Image 1 (cartoon, helix red, strand yellow):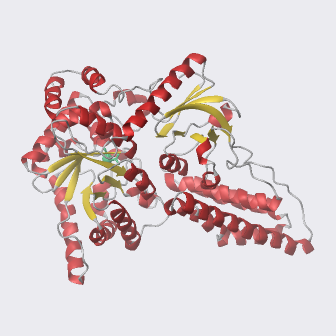
Image 2 (spheres, rainbow, N blue to C red; image 1 turned 90 degrees about the vertical axis):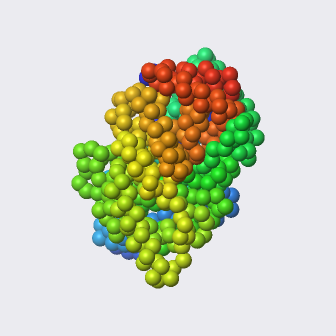
Image 3 (tube, helix red, strand yellow; image 1 turned 180 degrees about the vertical axis):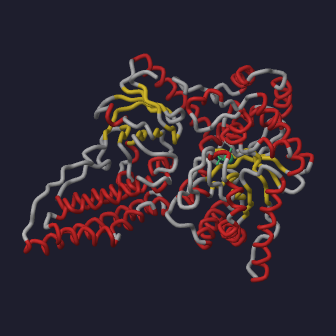
Length: 588
Ligand code: PEP
Ligand code: MG
């Protein structure tokens, strides 16, 4: 990779070039001084005043977020309020001021850093990210103790790209949104606040760039490619021109695509494909609705578990599912039961770490061994089913016995509820994800005992091609159009249809326009993807007849490699929908 090109994780798609606003000045030096016995009370009073002042600030920010964005995003600031009420943090600081006779800002900054480091050392990605909350709110307290003004994003005068170590909820809350074109950060992942906010605001974002803040200064020009997770610093004129052209093209395309949001996913010869969205966190619901999703095809509930130190209670599950069901009704929501394991660990439950976590104790295997945890979730889903249209789907089924055991546990929960007279939707569909080669090859058997299939290509590809999906080194081998993968998909759809059940797809492949004609021609009934991909997929579906798609499938099944297949589809699609298949400059 070139020196001025950094690779991170693209968490919100789109391309934009712009000027850097380096959100810095966050670290300021904390004075250390000894105090006399008589000053202790004064120090403690200052501390209490700063805590109260900070609480008031955060409450105001929370109100602003609830007003200007929505209540879901405002909840993020509740984590900050909790830090401000943390008895251990407060008492430890006070005790140490008294014992060590040192000024309160010095003591508080040390206690705070200790707590943040404890979070950082945790295995769980979500908890690790909570260290940022602790530091963020702690800095507010310190600023109030020191009487410092904060450099904020509220008074931006020109459009900028915000570059930061991390972007905290309180930064985004006061942010002048019209002036922010993209986010770029050193740290973060798909579940970090920066990612959630960027997706909700629909601006490009790249996180986990490690050292971007060390490589840029205020006013530098950068290109942010949120689709491919790339940042190019001070690009030459030629690169800039290339990206500018692409940005303009994407803008025109986006505008044109807006007209597709409310149209059905229907081919010119009137074949309907249901188009739904994947949901990780309820914060994404407004974007899902505004992109014209016909329901949620995959609700990844494990994020609900990762978001905490303890296990969610049945009522917490229930409230979350009820909320989503009510927001999405009259459309349906497919709740995938807990898919822990692989790269999503809950450290307190899954120790020790395994040698091959993707082949290990994950998803349904974990749930069948822990029926207590599984039943809590199932009970909540059943109870919430009266508030909308819910469906259940089990992840990582590798044979019919697992499906039977899962259904048996579900049946026990149903009976419990019936005995207690608790209402639930008795006709709720229960399906299986097809994401292991063994499930794909026994789809005819599974289809007899499932109400639907949803193909999880992210895993199906990794297992069938033996390519670790998170290992960058072999990323070039991760080919959705590999003939082996396409043959498997085709056979799953045929097996499902022979059993008269519908077959959907919720892996990333479902949201890639280049594969749409293939999936259409193979007869997929539903495609579920990240909300932003919906309009372009609709556009492709509305431009290709089922007849043409079927012919294309026949043709590509005679080809030998993924490259040949992609070339063949691209050539055809470039003619049918020239503005959908723009390849981002720079590539992966
Ligand atoms: C998949 O494997 O395709 C899928 C949708 O599940 P996840 O990405 O959560 O493993
Ligand atoms: Mg999967």
